[in-house]
Image (cartoon, rainbow, N blue to C red):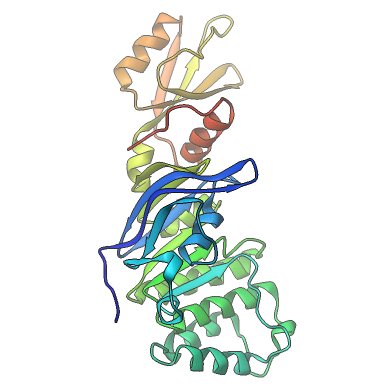
Length: 310
């Protein structure tokens, strides 16, 4: 029997350690059904570990995880059929022909299978049925992986760095296929990527994970609105700025100093900079790439402290 929940993903106090490395640190996360949710974090943040636990391929040390309303550790074959998964490696049986692989997947997911999304996605990559998987380029294998995942009619589609290593043509084809075909499906998409241009194009919700914990969860626009970029001119030597409230990072820019602040009003920043002798200053909005980089760089530049919450 299919179990439907308003949350496609729920974790509670989820932890997983590899030796001395804590990959997931009491992660509490809930992802609502529907739309595209992007997971962002530095290397080693715990994203891939989270995916393995959600798919039931790895058990946590403590805490729990539910996917599509079911305990991830107890997923059956018919439960996993409701979840599509594409990762960066696009590992497919190289000795098989494309048509043979499709036939195999069609039999495995017969109750949910649809040829329409399969054929439409493959058309983006001009993959031929009589080709062997070993003959496909990396981009063509990525397209085939996406086509197979969508053809099984998933309720949840997990994409873990799916365009990593693809050239610009293949990456564009993958994103176009996902936008035109995948997002027409009645499924929730979880998209993990380091590439902010992809995130800005796809994501309706943003999840920032760092050091195995949830740091921020909101729309990309809401996060960017919390960060402001200032260009400041000091008449003489730039003063000490590290103790400025909400300062994320600073860097010289010719005769100017560029500063990024979190959760600070324009008036409070202006007053603080004037107190340090600023001669001229101007604020401006900041894009998602700068925002994410500033937040993550700040955390890597100092010991872990209190986490940032929405």
